[in-house]
Length: 221
Ligand code: DX5
Ligand code: ZN
Image 1: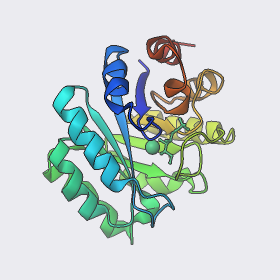
Image 2: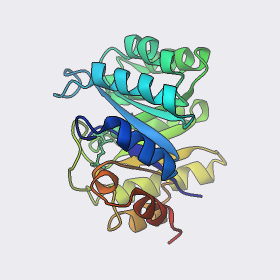
Image 3: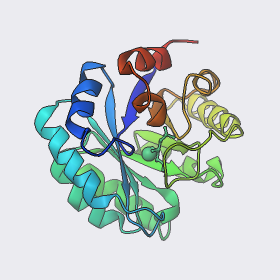
Image 4: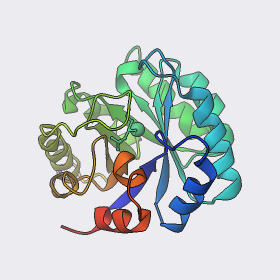
């Protein structure tokens, strides 16, 4: 069953509350929280995402899907655990070494959250394999992390297919989330490839009827 995680990165200033309530009513499965530190990626959304997450926590019971695009992963875990996220995902590329990856996995679990690892478009999918038995989700970036509204990188479809094949061949139950440029045009191919959680920001927030687009994105091919 395909789920949708709406990225709130591009919520219009002054319309936050109205948008969050409308997204909840439209049955998004998650709120996707794009945390950027201005170092791992150019933009800095850190304080804004912490404020939005705290607000959403107060008005909604929907789970938070926190995507950390930061260098200081431990600090971000400490800061965002306060909003009791359903899952915290960090970037493999922000980790110093294998030991640091396992430290982050352990620390997130100790703080009662599920764990995801994200990989940038240029990172080979094989680099994530050794961590899969210990995590709940792999986030395959389908754009270069750092901003919303970019165009889907079509060669990521093959990457999702390869990852799905490996997960199935090794009898693992791991979610594959795709993030960036996901819309009604790009969703069918990436779902067919094996993604079961679709992050969408622009495609949903620019729609007049959020529920309609969310339902369509979830539609089985
Ligand atoms: C990019 C973020 C994505 C982005 C998705 O760094 O991780 O979540 O906001 O936005 P759209 O759906 O507009 O590509
Ligand atoms: Zn994201």
